Length: 497
Image 1 (tube, rainbow, N blue to C red):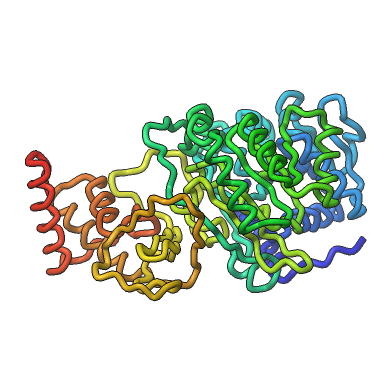
Image 2: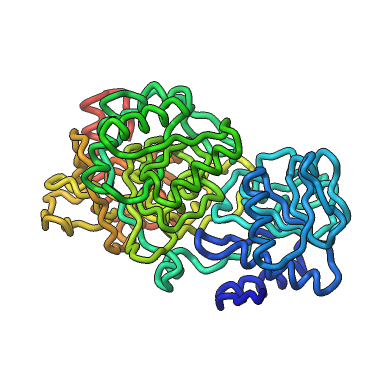
């Protein structure tokens, strides 16, 4: 079977080959819809033609079976190395479970390809596999190379876990070319998550405790709101829902069924045949809503899915982007994906299909003034109509309202989902303010937190995407700081500027 690559895929593979001339382990950042499996298969075929052996490594049995089917359809003979399912391990290409090769040892290969490579940073199994084949060239594919420590230095590897990153076409380009669709996001006011514990997830990110979240979101009224808003905004469209835990997912499904909407729950504890049967029925349109916790965040490809319900608040950028990617693939008659965000996550993390320029994390604690990665600005709510507009847009594109104070912070106490507008806006003004606040803090010896909180007080969002470039403090900013200090001193005499 002949495989025709898109131009940007050809360019990415060429860049990867160049990078591997001077690095042993690299990441290929391939957004959802970029065709990472097609690129991997092209690399595998080229290696086999040169007499090389290749191991394609996955971290879940489901992904192993899915990859094997793709390779079989593409005419790539391959063996399997996975527990008792191992067969034909001496073929030039083997699809491996990372758990099995970490335990048994990786056979002799000339190239290792790691699927969903963001999982490698927090996994002992991946490190043991890579340590055992330290000299082998390794390519990791992922849409979200943001794990803490993905670029960390390991003495055992005599180098970094991954040493370089090659970026395929960004999400905006893939959307422009028609390989992805845009998404429309509807979101409620941010849930009250005060007091919820944060803990490191498997990617090294701080996220909410699942146990604590369940007590906040798994409530009849909130679940009823999910169904109510879906009936208004997503009715009849194939939908996947991400819940906080199994019980929450089951309650959501029960509420949909009670409303006459066909819905089914899916979890990782189900028999494999039953799980595959549920997914098959969903893809064939036998029911409309498929609810899960995190099982469908990776490796689930059904382009016809139009709606995602985000019922689990998260601070994990990786988890958020992986979930959002499920509704970005194009399909006949599908103009856009719809996200019903009942978690407030979009307000904290931006849109799941924003372009992000974030370097590989070396795992070290941040310095007192680290260079911030380029991240998209966060949306902001119009105080007149509750439409969420991009940060930096002064006049509301929905109702035309122009606030008298640019720094007015609107708070909507209602629970109605409102649309987030995605019109473009410049960040120059915000960057200038941030740079002057940064300079002021340097001159006064203030800690970094002062800058972040002052910026948030001015603009209503944390300073994501701002660069630490100090600028001379102008009259307007200095006057605002003075006014802020006076206001704070009146409300709390102990507070400084």
